[in-house]
Length: 167
Ligand SMILES: [Zn+2]
Image 1 (cartoon, rainbow, N blue to C red):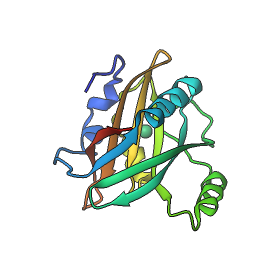
Image 2 (spheres, protein in one colour):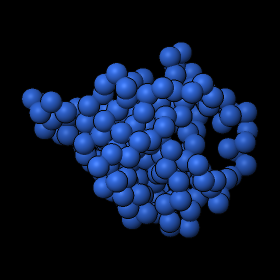
Image 3 (cartoon, rainbow, N blue to C red):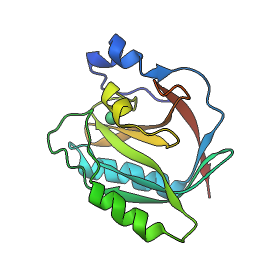
Image 4 (cartoon, rainbow, N blue to C red):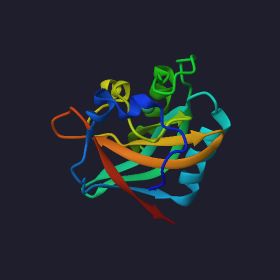
């Protein structure tokens, strides 16, 4: 894991540290290099604004298998680095298109402009259990780090998920 070039003080505050559960998750995020590139590219393109979107694929016993990445509008237009609001219309459209395809929405990604790829308390408030949450850190316009998270069993913190690149 690389370290962020930018880490605002609040990321070391108790409120932020409390949303991290250091238990090792056994589930993994399986994602192709092409999809990883897409996440980083979207995050860089959107900088300095925060971008978000959906991961589509399949959840299974060993984790989340990503088949495609779908940018969705961020309705939060202020430049806060720890707030995003995924457009529900975009969500519903993709969800509808997936019906009968065997694929489903398995996660939500978003970027942290000039902030580390660690979840914030706000991220926890809006997170759903069972979803994968990749966060892309974009520092001075370049994607420097991508970490993936999921909500723990008690629903009170994020656990880090390891990422396995597929072909
Ligand atoms: Zn966030």
